[in-house]
Amino acid sequence: MSDILSPEDQHYLLNNLGPINVDEVAGNFNYNLFPEEVEQENDFLIIEDYKCEIDKTITPAPVTENVLTNEEYTGPYNFEVLIDPYGSKNAWVYSVPLNKVYMNMKIPFPVDFRVHDRPDFPLYIRTTPVYSAPQFAHENVYRCINHEFAPEDVQNHVRHHIIRCNNRLAEYEGEKSRNERLSVVIPFAMPQTGTENVREMFEFVCKNSCPVPGMNRRSIEVIFTLEDMSRKIYGRKVLNVRVCSCPKRDKEKDEKECFSGNLNPPQGKKRKMEKQDKKVLMSSDHHELKEYSVTIPVVGKQNAQQLVKYAHDLMAGEVVKRLNTGNVVPFRKCLSKINTVNIRESQN
Image (cartoon, rainbow, N blue to C red):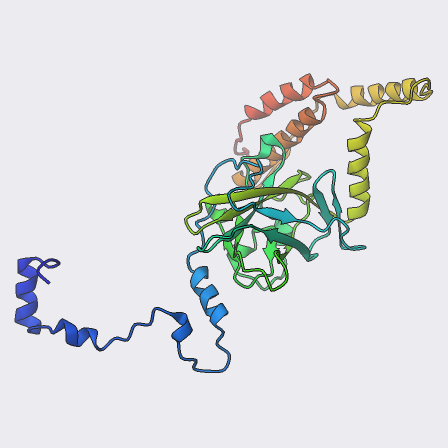
């Protein structure tokens, strides 16, 4: 005890408590370090569940990076994320060339995970939604107000997450009140007999079209990372996601736009309507390039800031869409003006 307590502390303990027999005290405690030897108090204790509960208490820390990389990384254990390319009839569809899944809200979506030469320490899978466009990559993905406050039997901090996992050990990391990035962490279970894959079910509880503070028509991708309890990453995979009301229609539209940009018109044939289409576009575009000013009274400074932010994001999105077609100058000028907007209290 002299190696731990100072002489003054030893003197105090001896005078007030008397001498202590360490061996006698230690004998009153029965430590069991092996869960396999725990006596069952009822018929429902399962050793595997007992181990999972221990692992659950040491999940990795929440994501803190400002901008997450979306560069895929197979890692030392050959981490794989597998999506069924055929999906189901109405619930969700998957585009192989776009690596993108389309689904409606609250539709269970299966994702299979696999590793090779699994290590002997616990692994976790973190699922993090991020915005695909570089100009929005630093922003956190939250639910819109309508869906956040919809009737739901979940804890308050879970309401802000757009992704849910039906794994009972899922931990929802991050706090919107602290402007933190949100993610869902689950223990990477052992595969069942006869398969190398571990299937988990996810669902999305907000749409891409939902207004600010929701996704506001911005595209998102989900980053799956394989981690240990110290948050060291052993693998990373990315999946593009669109949460919408008409998954099949949106998939066909995106694939058509993607492929049409890579296809050349047939040789020896002319497009008779090309000039007419161009004129219509120019006329419409000329009308849309006019600048407008709007005065809108808003109650609450934070609401006013959100309104300005929405205008900024809207103009930034137009710049991105028109990079390959030109006519970005008016939108850049408008962005510069929005960046200098001062929010003032109204004088009534």
